[in-house]
Image 1 (spheres, rainbow, N blue to C red):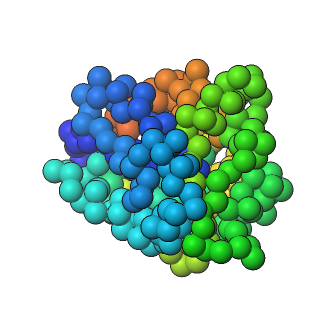
Image 2 (tube, rainbow, N blue to C red):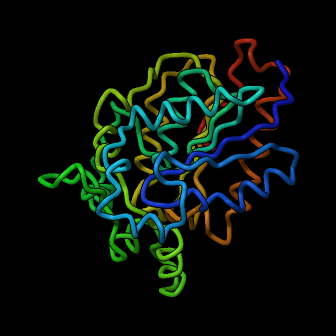
Length: 277
């Protein structure tokens, strides 16, 4: 089966603004795609505006993961054809769910939060993300990642000035209820189900969602006739979308999509890749 679908939806993860995809949207559009990076509900504003809404951002505070997934599912269905879906971090989890629902022509999970069934026991993950669960705090108040936590979880290894600029430009309040949803059936996928082509991308320096966790996520899928791939890039931390090397990641994704969606054997029950790079 061949497809000429040239639509792509980028799905943003937690803690940061959807504007982190701006360069990606432009880059894909220059290569013939109709691209969109829609904001989460209650997040369609600048980082400063969103931070200034605390503690009155109750709409965001009470947003659930189910509502968030349904939000992106509705957008995916609004395209003239099934789009390529590329998601980062929690957006990677949403991508996995939407691929599982057969709403994508293909999916790319970049440094992805794992679905239910892949227990994230890695110390660096727990250190990076446990506070957003907001244990013993009000669910009517959002969580704002501190600069120190952002340094560890997102921008480790980068110069202080770059870290500070990224924090001020992109970091926004987060919903604890969405984060807690990742521990429930709202985050479930059927690992045995046939699915559109799915690529996992990891980064060697990611302290939030490590290659070890991403590999466990990838290996949870049962080997069937679906196309399933994994790629680890050296030198990438969790801030992968904004690193100087982001075009290398984007080009790899573009080439992968072109290969799997134009291959004449795609859809005929033949496993074309299904292996670690």
